[in-house]
Image (tube, rainbow, N blue to C red; front, side, top):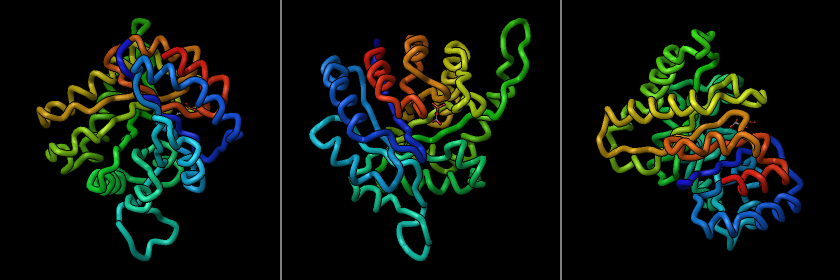
Length: 256
Ligand code: PGA
């Protein structure tokens, strides 16, 4: 199997840290020995420092769940890319659908955040995905509306960024159909792979050198991850609820 990037997004939850630590440390050495890819853990801001200490001397990387676009100043409650970097953060999730839906985060804001994070040298995981899937036609979903929706999101979120070739390597896209997040209703690996291919194609049209990794997220667990992982185009996974359960973590890593 080709390399996969596993992003564990804890959201506003915490696993029992000692158990999580034990589970991740027992399962990652083989993963890294076999060069299966990379693992990133994104705890809440309040736990970045603690988790950073836990994963010290391992190859696991630290990620944040959001970032603000200004570097400093009077922005109550916000956290800058520099502050995150000072805590050892290497990756940042931007534009997660929960922020778009519940916190009114617009494409304009997301665009500013992506630019600021890339400029600061962070790896950006930009989340895109359609809110609902159209009805089936001939036993297959019609993906045209989903593709149009995602295309528009990418255009707005990456406005003025795609031409900046030097940032290409640090840009990762996570395809997360909103209806599949936290619902237990994952997309079919076939449809997810088709959309991942579409995302790669739409980005390549803009600049030849930009070949971002594209991940899938939405109810990924240890039982379905292998079916997605078979698709070479899917470069990894953004995993929410399953990343909190020690047994799931072990099995997910084993499956990859
Ligand atoms: P889920 O969350 O795995 O619980 O569906 C994924 C995500 O929100 O990134």
